[in-house]
Length: 244
Length: 258
Image (tube, rainbow over all chains, first blue to last red):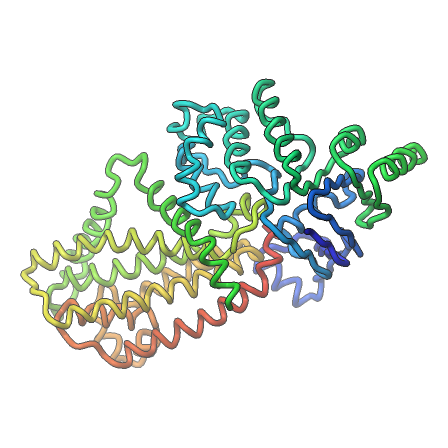
């Protein structure tokens, strides 16, 4: 279903930021162009089978988000490859493609197009999206007048209109007010029950234990453990304890 | 190549949406809206015709049409390349979070400028009509220059959009460059004056001028010139090849710089 093979990504940071042609030319002539390189991820390999729910554990800066971005296709790995079978929906940063001057209705088509959904499909699902988002008449108001909760509701409603085969979740979503939160959690649970593959990133061992059946631990860009969720989360707890 | 076409098919709706967005937002919230697209070239034309028509000794026939054709084509070129130049950084928020083919952004920028440009051609029709110019069979010659100009703008826009990711001062350099190109495109003076001088190469090998020249020929009912047809096509395809090559080579690094 999803196979990560020897993935590594090299970030190159300039010691001083050179982002103008003028600086670049001066530094080039003076031979002052120096870079600091580091592997944000290195030698990552694991497989996720269909219907499996994988938790990705790790401290801040371990490379969890970078890994998710590689799987979602936003970042390209420097080495190794990611093999995916099936449609993928990343529920990361909902509504990243929204335009503030556009109305909610227009944004449904814009954001939908960005996620790669065809026009006919969006037309067909339009009412369903509006209804789920509970925006009512606000759907014809420019997005700049929305509250952040309303934006998140719209983003969630559009992104989850398809039933993906692979779902990527960064922390548990807390979208909108208590009522909508319940509704969105239910929708995700429904997806879970249909047996889709899930990648779930979290700091919280509790959430990973209750949602996932397998887990991996990332530390400083390396994969240090993988296996069933009980073993791995116990290992993670011990690692944190030892650190303190 | 095959996967490129499949990918394009999947995201063609996005290209349409991005183009539509630029055009729509341009005309929304502005009272004059579409009228402004017509008014702006018309006002500039009037001023330029009065100023340069008066100080120039040799008279060009239908001087206002001469100016308008040059200005409309130049405005599309400079506007389209400038919008494309900024397109990757302007859409940084999306590029960092959602995967879409990245060339969509500069391409949509040029496409929306092209639509505005086509709308503004209404002014040309009105002014040429008012001047008593009649369409001839040579009018069919407008299409090739327009297609060439579109490809040229996409090609240069693509190249600029990549460079702008890495060099932030490019925007200002390009503003200066487009201004110099404007002076070398014979927009508000008769081209012959300069073509016959020792600086003639400045105009002759300016691909934008080639396109303008053939476009004018078509409007004035004259046959197009072979050199002005072939040269800009060769130029545009060459730049497009370089642009696409560099774009594909660098696009995976965009997300690290924007």
